[in-house]
Length: 75
Image 1 (tube, rainbow, N blue to C red):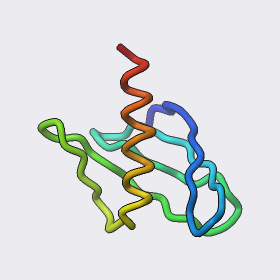
Image 2 (cartoon, rainbow, N blue to C red):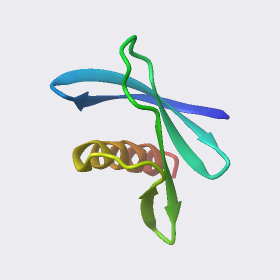
Image 3 (cartoon, rainbow, N blue to C red):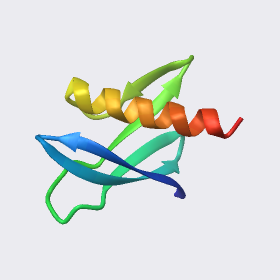
């Protein structure tokens, strides 16, 4: 897995720090919090983001925003 960046996301009124990795075509979000926040992944296919696990819409939106900002900075 390639370590890409870290980001903060709001989950249940808490600020949760996530590390983002790239692994086998998936962007994996891994919680750095001591609490049990979900690890999840997104994949980009044909210019659309798809989640592997079922995610709440607000969490998916935050993750996509973080990925798009990161990828934009790479160009």
